[in-house]
Structures are given as C-alpha cells and as structure tokens.
Length: 195
Image 1 (tube, rainbow, N blue to C red):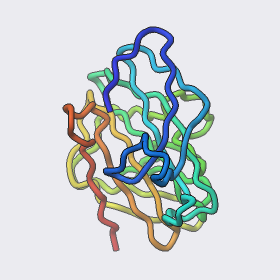
Image 2: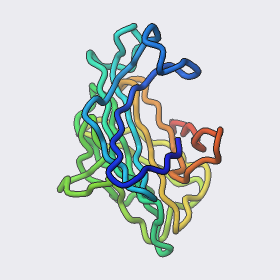
Image 3: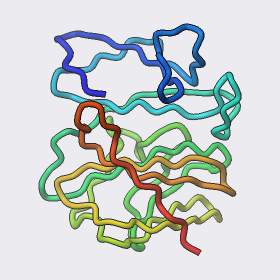
C-alpha cells in the first residue's frame, strides 16, 4: 500500500484475508497493531503478521502477532540490501548464509534483525549483490535448510525474505522492497528447497 502521510500522521493496522473489506467488523482479523505507528512522508514500512489467527488459519504458532519495521527506499548503489523475517516457531534464532558466507547472525523468531539487534530496518549489506542461482542457507544449531535464489539480487536494491511454516515444512519467499504500482501487489518469488 502506498500512502502519502502529512507530518505526524499515525496509522493502526489490521491483517485480514485477501479481498475482504477491512472496515467490515464481521470479517476475520488475523492480527492487528493497535498502537499507532507514525510514517514519515517519503518513508516506508513493512507490516508482518505471524502465527495462527483466531479463526484457525494455521501459520504455525499459538497466537497471531503483527509488527512493523522501517524500509529503506533508496538503497546505496554499491550494495544489495537483504533482510530476513523469522516466522518459524519451532526453529531457534538462525543465521543466514549465502554461498557459504554468513551475512546475518541470530535472527530471532518474530523479528528481522540479526545480532547485535541494533538495526532499525534489519537489512544486511552485501557489497557484490547476490548472484543468480545462489544458495541461501538458514542455519540454526543442527537444523540447516538450503534454498536456491533463482534470480540475481542486484546492487542498489533492497529485498525482504519471509521465512514461515514449521521446521519440517519451511516456506521461503523473496520479495522486492520496491513500492508496487497502484493496484499491484509486491513482486515475490517462492524459493525452491535444495535436496
């Protein structure tokens, strides 16, 4: 969603099924953020919901939660920015490894920032970008799952990776952080697990 807020405008969020009228109080709400969030003009945020909703939509957790995190709308031209949202309740904090190089350490459940957890956006900077057919590995103790990144992540672009499901059945979606055209949805690709 694109908004052009006036200075000091605050927003609350509800996550509802696709295609429902979020103003209709009879429609299910998967998760909500009732504490107002301020969005600066020209800035962006990502809203993330994880867990099981009240109406039984299973995302692998006992309680639905939602959070917001700031976006970087103008990434540096010299590197690719990548962040990973951890929404897998039965996997501890994980490291993100791309082609054998650890790029983020200790992403905790419900978050997108790695250790030392000081980033306001969660992005890791990868100077060379990520090549086509790169191997993205999530490593948490003895749990290691690898996926193929099907297309190059270029320098000067920001990407969010959403990891959900359970340890036995992970889903990994790679989404461009460019603002979609009005009426469009984000450009996302599901990553294929490696054998």
